[in-house]
Image (cartoon, rainbow, N blue to C red; front, side):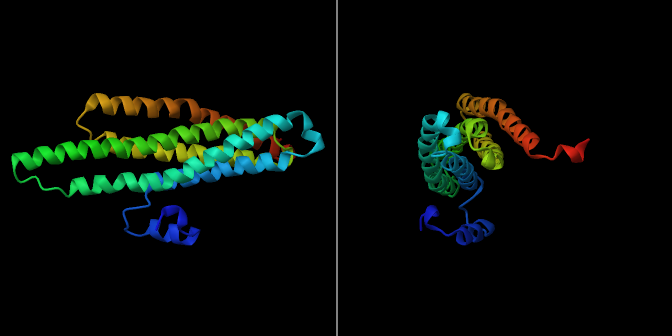
Length: 215
């Protein structure tokens, strides 16, 4: 059964079991998709409101981007599981002879590259989700600003979780130049977008907290 065909309860039960998938990467994609969906909800609660007529077109454009992004992240839940299968198979290859060992090393290297590529895609999509959350927090309905903050927090968590799934695979790659390039891309996304998500959380939290309690 495809990951996205599982119910929430089934997904969590399988996640909690010793089944190889879903794992951290697929869960990161799902959490990122949830974050993007929350941002999209803010947009849907903003459109059609007279108070926000000036930003109607901008919000509609954000909603279109958010819908496409959510679908991309949903697809990456399954893609992460698909990328793990050849990696697991590679680890099981024999290495009793020099020929077998060389074949295993080559297959394993290709599988590690593929298993790194998917969580890196998840990171890129989650970074875009944080950028969308910024816009929703700034321009969306004030009645749903907490959801824009939640969107940023979830996308940040998914971004960081996906990075760990990049690093666990690149660490094992024999092609150190390729590994370093993948790590550098992941690091760049973390460096830029984790602080941006934190800024959204701080701004939204500041709008919501009762200042009378904090004098």
